Length: 280
Image 1 (cartoon, rainbow, N blue to C red):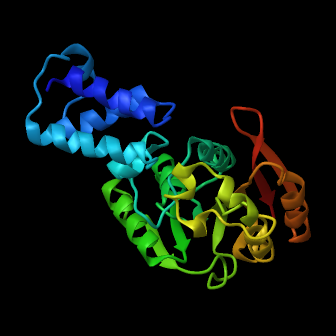
Image 2 (spheres, rainbow, N blue to C red):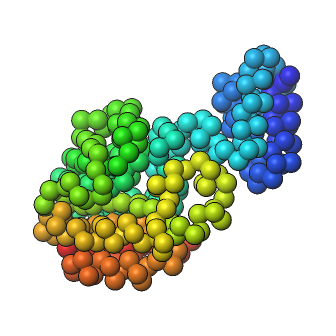
């Protein structure tokens, strides 16, 4: 079959499965299976594809039809224009989380070499994006999952940041010493337990539950963090936390009770408050 025929058949299968981004997803999977660029698919639809690669493509399309995200199928996700490997133990990074990176970078701009602590680091995408932009900074990523830490270490190595990033096992701030960080960043689990069943299949079935489930009201992680953030930050330090919809006021109050001097709000591109920044 040709590239054009395969792309068309894949698109039709994904449309039938109710995938909104059927055309794009079919093209991305075809590029992966046939080892060609998107430009090639568009410019040379008559290009023949050998049977082995065509069969592989069909299998990938079926995985997507079963609602497995393209990023999971390919094992990679672009975040902050960097390429990150994924694994079953880590959250698939979302573009919305770039709001956290952008806000944290703005805070770091006037400061000299800084120490960054990333809690629930997962793939390491937040910490590594910051270190990529800040060549003099160093950082540590903490995660309760050994498998997630393995993914983060591989990403640090592939991005050439292994010398400035270390990763260690821990349950939030329990094993973290006093005054170790200028900046703390985190994208904690913030979905209320009862709401998990309503998530899209791409999230509910393929993201690790531990990275989603925020407890009865979605605020369990924020309660744990707010108790210790002041202790682990150096004087003049700050913590930037991503939050879920409707959680702004509750997390704001927790951070103030935890000793924050000020708490600033940062909105995403849609205008929704996505990040709270507590200064200590």
